[in-house]
Image (cartoon, rainbow, N blue to C red; front, side, top):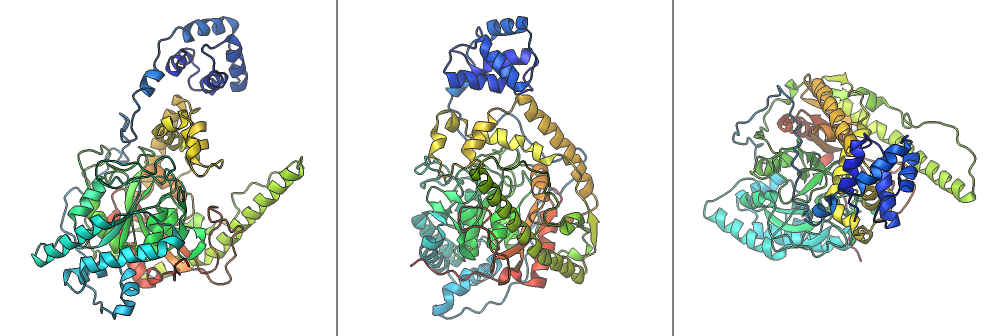
Length: 619
């Protein structure tokens, strides 16, 4: 039996490992069901990869390739679980960087005065209250944890048929936790601002006694016999887990095995992903806060779509132990909330080393609500704010369509491009207004640009790592079980990624290191950089590991252009009348305290975070 490891080793010996040749040749053997590589296979693969190989070399390769011992098959037999990370650790910290390591007591904002309204309006009033507001009500015993828990459970049940954001209610666990939270407060054992507050977990966080489905068909009944570190830490903080919330299958988009999670502002739209359920449930006032994850936009995109305040922390600040792995060098866990300070209160509880996730360093997050944000040096991505919609579209001449079907496809693509351009043009005024408001607040915005690098090409690392994390799914053909099977979905990406040569993965890592150094120089002069949410910064800062806060900055009017499709699973079904717009603040590595301080000041000056959707339960 021919094995891939031996095959690749031999190709490497001939200087071919950094080309398409090995993948093409190996694919031929798998497609043909061959037990041996033939000279014809080598010739075909060489022609596709445009590699000249002499006849002598072909014969020598045949002897080498077909004589090698088994290797890959032996590794496959280990059935390596998703929880095992590689013996390689990505570290965003460059030589000479310094950051705070001493953990200090939090300095939260002054307790708000919140009148407790009559019973008939209680759920609506408290459902949309901030963590800081709810914390004060619980601390002063004006509201009990049991009452909040029962209220949020009822809202989750009432709105889930319309929004499809719940995978599993953790009702029994939640009510037991809530009773204990109340008893602890009576006994004088108050644990802090999350004590007694109900929250929801993206269903890639392991929770003992409950299924952890990863949103994917084929994993609907998966049980992981442990609590993720983040779950344990929120338990210790006294928070109450009320639900495992949806994510797009294996952390992509908002399509999961139970349907499409919806945007509470427009239930004909998906909530975006992959933290689809956390953003939707938080926006709909069905949890006090939630935990999402981001690899490449999975906190940013649903927070923007649903009008939440999302925090993507610095890579390596929050342990991922017990969370599904997609990309070991890019995965991050973070809170999705209603306010910037809410994000700070949650981050305080979940950050720091756990002794298991090797990427987590000894950096401290010290929240100070009184930090003087006026003294922070702030930049803004001037070119991104000024970029005209369609600037990056190439206007190359196309050959006439060969068939009516091809012409129909081109017309549809043109329609979608025009819709995206119209939405971007309409949204410019919200970004312009945000910059004007920041200047009015006294923030001196200094224009800055991100360094130019082939960032998209570096995403080879994400593709290769994700394909590795779910390699057995691909090899066994079980990827066919996943609900969504479009060209951009995981099954096709995983299959394609098996053809990425190891050399190119390492080259992408080296290019990434160069980009990290260049971006770090930009941040030497700024504590915060303001950016459009939908801009190149999303890819750049996910690669470098810098933190980001995504916050609402307006609500589209009745004149907003409508989406080009009504398919809720289509990412282009976004925007339109009555939906939120967003803004992003970027920070230095481990600079979350400054980042959140400025975001909080902006929210207090604008009040956009106080707006909430009016969701009608499904009939």
